[in-house]
Length: 309
Ligand SMILES: [Zn+2]
Image (spheres, rainbow, N blue to C red):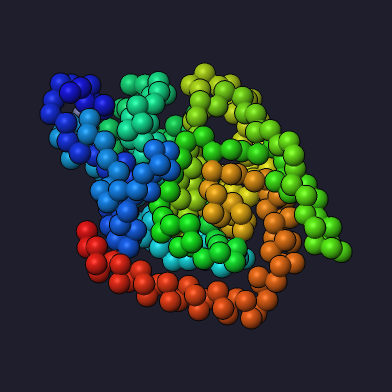
């Protein structure tokens, strides 16, 4: 086997697609739900093409920082209007998401042309502390504002996927506030971005990250234009080497359950109106939903005990 990182001939070792340290935080999510292959299995998602030296010595520093990001900020659930003060190391965050995307692409035998020697050096070298110019990271809080409890769609607190749909306009075109009738937009092409190589979405319980990889030769102007569209059009916060931002909710009652759909900010607002019209946010229904969540949490505690890691 040729190691995916150092490109030397060696015996392959098992590398978790998402760090084991993160999976360990959520033992109650014991099954891997693979929608792409239409399979559910009990093992962790892995690839087996990394040599022992790269796996244990060269790229493992990324896992410990990944664990602290998730355990410090995203184990807890947030409410609809919560704002989170988020302090982070931007370069390490880029490395973490790039590593997971690279693992996932290899596990699917997908194209990895983006991962040039330069990018591999960036991942393997702990001492490289400057972020990559052609990688953008956005983040928001995933908050369930729908009347459907989490477990209805499977207990998958950790989810990821390649090339989520960045919509160019709202999913709902019109609401009649008198009758409550809603009309979906019949045509809603994906937003075009210049020189986008690929993108990924990652959900770690209440934290939802977007990784966008731009072609290496993207001009500063195109990069700026793309980032302005991302910032203005979507309910996510763009991260930077500044290392500190406030995060707010990036999901609606629909996109919470379908993370591959990136609705525009005003689309999320329209869904919030639908949620409000349905009465899901009355005190009574909030109380009921909290009671369901409390009981489910107890079930999760039992699951975590039954499926120790
Ligand atoms: Zn290696």
